[in-house]
Image (cartoon, rainbow, N blue to C red; front, side):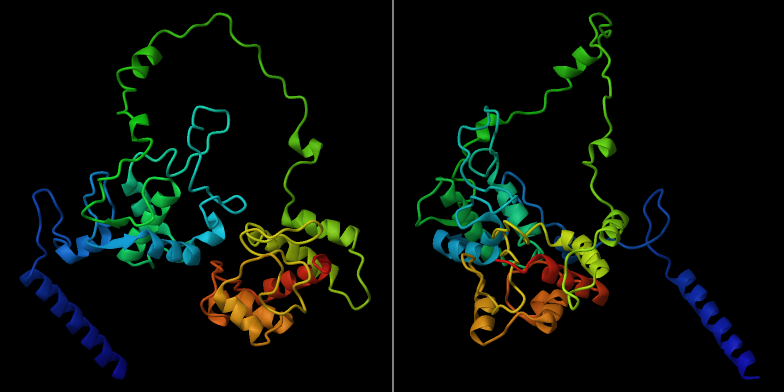
Length: 346
């Protein structure tokens, strides 16, 4: 009886919805389907965040070079260097003047970019790495001003705003021109092809797999580990877990090095990390949050490493590590085992 009542109620609700829809049909356009509604201005504004070369789309705001330097050091220098020189394989942001016609062109804001709007839009939309769109408009103006200063475009007392945004010309603006391929290249490509003096066919002499340069797969690593176990003490980490950790560590290798010859890069090298006081690797400039954690007595052991690897910013708030963390407890333990087996020497 209860089931019959529920079914009757559901039918009544469905009938009411159909009746309501018939009474208030969705607005339509000619040739449309009568679905949806016109977007509200505030809804459009939330998506319309691009900045055009003529400055259209810029929000009201301003920022000076020195404020920009502070923000840049906090949010950008870990990857791009204090002066835009870049760390490791991250992009260079300054210099490169006169290099575009050479064998090794350095494309930077000063040497290559035609429009300042590209800088503002990219910083606002995609930076800092791992926390996109977290900067305020004034912070974006200030960082852009500092990048202009690094590229010798303005003096150190310069203040960038939406009002003077177009007043400073970009050094390579004249190096760009309108796309003329439809009138220059297309007629050439539409000609009859030349079928004489063709290049001799290319002969394949050896495959990458034979040369042993093909990247290892997860199964390859595991097979190697089982065939040739690492030299560890009886109480050392499990070789299979170490092999798994080596695979997982590839996500960390963009910023960290470990093992013989490891150097500080975007992040510190990880040799000798286990058992070390937090934030004390020599030669690396740590964020204030990590330095304070070390000063409070925190040491990297299995417990603290596991907590940090699972949620870097949650475990030590305010640090600059952009990685979101490992979700698998097994992967976390594997990385720690790999660090124990590989990074035991300074």
